[in-house]
Image 1 (cartoon, helix red, strand yellow):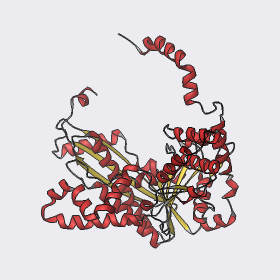
Image 2 (cartoon, rainbow, N blue to C red):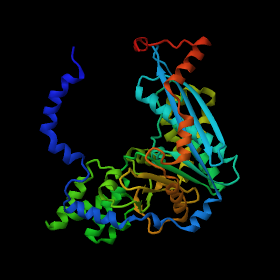
Image 3 (tube, helix red, strand yellow):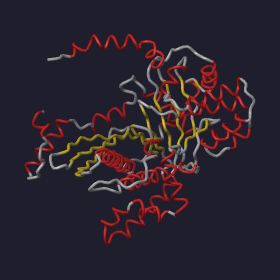
Image 4 (cartoon, rainbow, N blue to C red):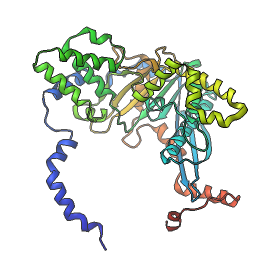
Length: 442
């Protein structure tokens, strides 16, 4: 019988053949070329020291705010009859140590396994928004809600019907819960913050490539474009008219570079020479599939979109369908009130991974779903400075990047062992959770 060791010889053969390619592909410190130097220049001019956001005024302001960390966790299983069960737990903990809990028991099925994971993820986010809302309403300070993860990712879910037995309208449920949370924060002049410990996004890289092209072409017309897609479309037209020269070759290489994945994390680890923060970006909706959906809403009307998108769910509702359609239309229209995001990267300690920080300020009027671009801010807003001060001060190390979020994560975490206990309780009630063959083997 073969053991793991029996593959070592052919593994060594493979890596010896691919060594140079692997080093070039994965290593951050590979040799610079002209394009790298251009991007590095743009990056360096927008890499700020930690002292640029640290000031006594911001620290004094922090006393007025109550920070609330929110996180969720879930475990589940599918059974022999094709049905699934999930337990979703979420918790909010404020800076005074008070905790607020929420639990959702989800039973569902779908012919598409990925559908269920998407449904559960959206239910978990809904649960987080509900528990955050309860925490806000129990505090007297100005609330700052800390979410574990990117706000941007939560906003660009596709408005679609999920082909599952239950919660086909889970997108609308999640967005309605988020809108309720943002409305409450707006009424209290609060903030919504997302902190990401492992980001694979490319928004900073995209903005750097954009600013590099603008500096090369020295064309003010490019600054007037109302979307990132219009910007690059115009750039392609402009370089097509240029004579063949070095600038044209560099821009073509920059455009080709967009086809390859390079995370913002990679960019920072490659170019940052000291701890600091990236100049914040104003970020709107850039996800093409999401933009297409909202374009359809604008073109055909929200009522037409709702009745076509959630057709099966509406058929199942019977007499309640009119109420659902009305609420769904209202939710989609209210999504337009969600403001743009300020996003930045914080590198508290050189050599450690950066943190992505998204800040949503409910009082800002520019709409996330109407702004299809990414731009560097000229001046860092005071409320962004306030958040960054807290993030920098709270940073301990790679594992405990934020003590409040760390505590929320530990409290919400549901283990497989705990889920097994929930299963036992349900079986004792007479619920037939029929094990699959692999469960017997395990």
